[in-house]
Image 1 (tube, rainbow, N blue to C red):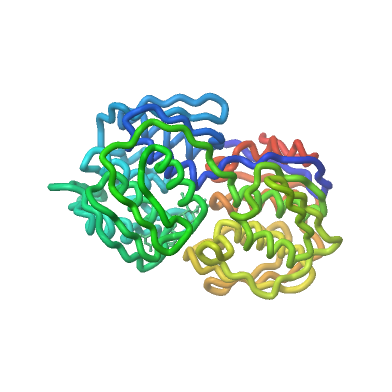
Image 2 (cartoon, rainbow, N blue to C red; image 1 turned 90 degrees about the vertical axis):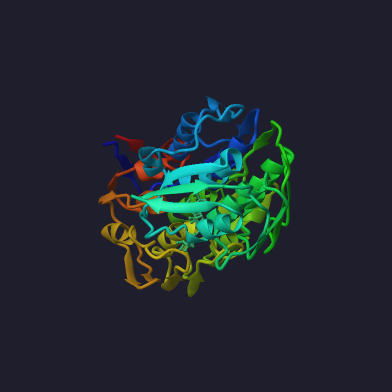
Length: 417
Ligand code: EPZ
């Protein structure tokens, strides 16, 4: 199994162009299923979750090709509506395909996505909404059999929680349904607006994304289009955290500061100067990072749960004690034990992490527990004195496009062994 080896405590310098957003490209690739023609998706990150999505599209009958950062999908003839169990297991967020397959084929069979490293990942909100739209769903031996006996009908849906995935699945099922669908208490993440921009460029009629209420007026057909994916705000936060913990001034290109207001304000609160100029930003860290009394993860536009591990890693080296409260996932602290192996002093009480800042971290051997937790261990290792070897790096490769190449281009002593 490949591992990442880092000799830490080195200053970084230079510029990184931030990749396209994983959590935007995945629902958009699912959305190509609704379009009887060839779509070009640009600024696609080169990550294993995209490869897994392409495998699913090809298994359903699409013709796909990848040229640098452009993925082309021709869904002119979709021949299947089932996603095999092993393909479902490859990527937890493949539940995203459910709405699109139903929208295109009028039926779908997927295996119930199991939990993941963040805890149980229920999809009750997805299924409730689809049933309200006229989908009949039965579960047998771990598979979900979905069928639309009549038509997918637009309807009013009130989400009890502004679930990102449920909002996206409803949009994907509603764009070609008959009538209008209204989603109340919709998720407001920028990736949802990006999905709507893509679908609208293909002839869909979606408005209200970014607000609590999204309106989707069903249309008969969608036409081929091309779209460029928004930058990945969590990957941007990852590199800012790396600059902060190594006391390095770096530049990030291809950033959307308006998508990461809550992140940037917390990096500033810890003493970093963030100079923004269009889609470029410069990070100027302080000599000593300051504690932040309390950080809470919230739905957008609150502080994103995915940036939590990167924020906690930075605060593990701040002056004083910080508190991080995780409000979105049940089990998002599994990587903390690995940070403590590097010398961090973090205690977990339920959904709260108590982070006592330490002056230094020390290299050790670690294992990734999940995608963002793995990235957090890489960031901590960049600051740590000595050598760190990181195992189970497939978690990181799911969402980070060439993190080793990017960090070594900034002068980090990092390689895959
Ligand atoms: C998306 O996951 C992202 N994944 C996650 O990013 C991100 O952390 C999350 O949104 C929150 O922003 C993708 O976009 C592929 P949710 P999703 O539905 O859609 C509960 C990463 O690191 N819930 O908003 O699964 C759920 O258990 C990943 O890139 C239900 O109870 O998130 C969780 O506690 C990790 N029932 C909370 O809501 C449901 O039917 C938020 O889930 C659906 C969700």
